[in-house]
Every structure is written in C-alpha cells, then in structure tokens.
Image (cartoon, rainbow, N blue to C red; front, side, top):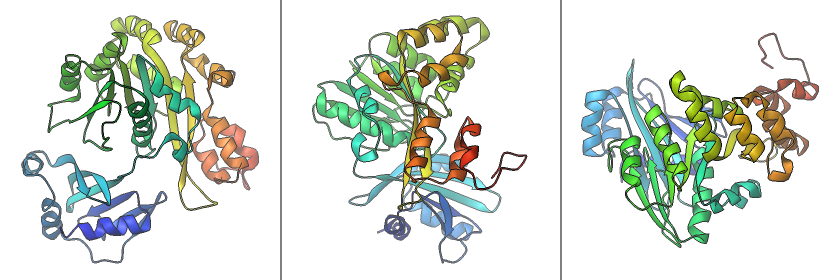
Length: 360
C-alpha cells in the first residue's frame, strides 16, 4: 500500500471530490465544493515528491522532470479511480487528485432529465457536454455512454487525457485510449479512429482547432461524436467553436456545424442545502431545423429564445433549471444568483441586494 493511499481513503470517507497536496501546506480536501484543511503537518517538497512518485508511472515521472506538469490516472481497486495532475509551483511540487467513482451512475441516478439519456440513441452527429472545470461533464458523458453500451451493438472508442470512467463491454465493444500512453494526441487518435470502424467516438476534451475540426468531420461522415468544452451555455458553445477558426473558414464551419450538431448540454454544479451533496443545473439545446438555420445564419444570439420556447423538444434554459432547484429548496438563492447568466431573474430571491460588483 502506497503512503498516499491513506489520503484517498480519507477522501472516500468524507465524500471529497478533490485532494490538494501542495508543498508548504497541509493536505486539503474539497468537500461539497468547499476547501477543508486536513489536520496534518505541512508538506515538505522532498517528502511530498517521494510520496507522489511512489504511484507515478515511470514514463510520466520522466516527463514531469522535463516539463514540470503531467496528467495520469491512478486506481485503488474497490475504492475509486483518480485523475492526477502534478505540477511545480513556487514552494515546490504540488498535485491535485479528482475522485472518479468506480460505479458509473445512470442518468436516472444522477437526476438528469430523460432528454440526456435519449442522446445515446442518436445514430450520427455531434453532441457537446459543456461547463466549467469540475461541473460533472465526465460523469454525464459516462452515463450516456453507459446507456449506449447497454442498448446498442456498436464499436465505441473513447479518447481521454487521462482515461477517467472505464466501461466493461456489454452490447458494444469499448476501447479506451489515453493520450500520452496509447496515442500522441487527441488529433492523432481521432485520425486513427476513423480507420478503426467506429460507430461512437468520445473526445474527452476538444481543446484545439485541429481536434475540433476532426470531431466535426467525424460527425459529418456518419459517426456519433461526444465531446466536451469549457463553455457556460449553449449559445456561447456554438460561438466558441466557430470563433476558433480563421475568419475565412468560419462561414463553411458554420454551415457544417449547423448540419452536424445535434445537442448541447451545458451544466453547472450547485451545493445542496437540504442534504449533503451537489446537483447539476442543465441548459439543453436540441438542434431542430430552426436552430440549424440560426447557426447557419450566424444568429446565435437568438438561441436563448428558441431554448425558452423549445420545451416540447426537451430543451430547457439554465435559468429555468436553477429556478426549479430554488423552488424545491435544494440550493441557496445566493448561489443561484451567482451562477445564473440572467441574474435579474433571481434578484427577488435574495435577502439583501448584491453590491456593485454583482456579488452577494
């Protein structure tokens, strides 16, 4: 048993989502969104480095010495998997571990609407799950892929950095490819995947122009592609994709995206105030013919209105999702106001007005 495993056991016992180990500080856990210090001595650089390198793959350790920054996955059988990031900072080495549960929760268990589960039945196109870091994008995608694995007979290839949730092949064949271990890059893996007879592709992070272009190309040639972006809502997601391309290519990308994009699920996590835990407020855009036309014509500023009137298609605005949680008394008015895009809707719920900076 590695020395660091005791901290992972503590994460499990406290329900922490993240573990921060930083030279010059005691260990810190993120529990229900809040940072909580562990009663432990200050971590010293050499001692922490030895603790971290005990679980670090040899090739990753060499890369860290060269670059000062690495990602990989670590697993404690029967407990959980962890996404690890090591980095150097002013006081020495540091690391952050994100807990990835061994059990993949279903859409129902996550409390997500049926529309999300239906995305697993699409035959082709691009589906994007978006939101800030730590908003549960990987968990939602895992639930969708898990449902596809149960109801379909297809070839699924995931490309991640690192691999987070691991699926056991059921109706589908599932191959997990990790960037840096099994392939050089997201783009290289996507190029290779198109020669590997895929039906469904999962791209863990669409972080650069080439990866985004290849994902759109794969979706436009008859494959179902799931990907993630760090955008706050549906309209910003469409704009983000188009804006990453040079101006002389944007009209063509807009046209292609209008045909290939099938849905955007933008999510934001909230702390529950009624029970221990968190919940995800969703904005869901389903690409209907009307939405497709708006994307093609560059009128993404009209998308919020279409989502508002598209409930019969399974669409919902972020504000309506947040409002539903407020009415159930699941979340605080202050956090609702803080994380909403249209903040004016939540002013009446505040016990005191926000200050001039928009802070409660």
